[in-house]
Length: 316
Image 1 (cartoon, rainbow, N blue to C red):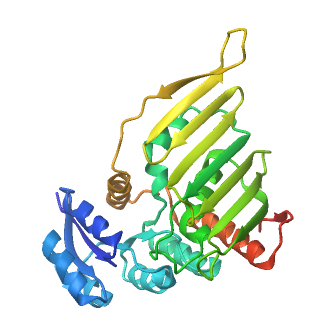
Image 2: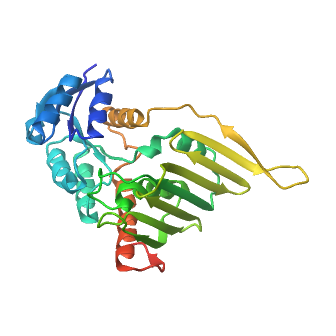
Image 3: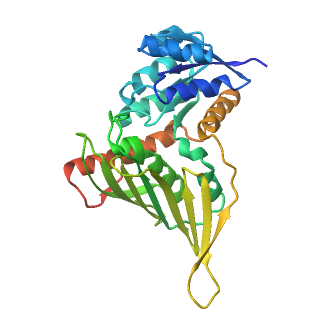
């Protein structure tokens, strides 16, 4: 079977892991990696036994697919170049800086019949997939994502950095389009928003509260879904999920049981799904369309916080 030739653009903290995962797939040939830091590129290239380049254009004509793990500001320009070259793309989140840029990439991929997958990795977390398989008609969702401050990823605010993962998840689980959003937040260390909370109303009546902070004293990644008389709880870090119901005893209490779910390497699952979509020319689980929806929510929430608008506003 002919191997899919792949490149990785950007081998910082996350990009190096993309490169490593590709090397472990039998149907993939990692052709090269690209990074403006030539020493870094050479270091990772030696580790994964691939060529190192400082210019992404060096991969033109040599790859069938690429992971783009560059800073968000570069997503549109780099992805557009490769789509125009007929190359399938796994683009890290957020998809782009603006919705207009996202629309252009989605349209270009569609016209050329190319896979455009966005790196919303939590879609592959068993703590999420196990719960999603059991849902009937969720009415209320809570998501919280917090972490101690680091200098990594401060090129965007916490909504685009952390919260956007959960915006994608709650939009998917709610099963309807968002219609209104209310938000509040503040900057603490950086000039950008460092902590934020949003309430999202969906067309079917479902409500989601989503909180994110990158100035927390602990790392937390949790999801709670209220579905009829059932409460589902997920911990993204442990990849464990639980189901709770009211007990039959005389004293009201919740009886909790763990939902069976095998622990997985979520990045590996995401990359394997991307390669499968490329092989089959099939629609990815998180296409550019889903990436754009998450970006639209994130941008609206960010704009409202920056303008001090805490009332509900419609989602366009």
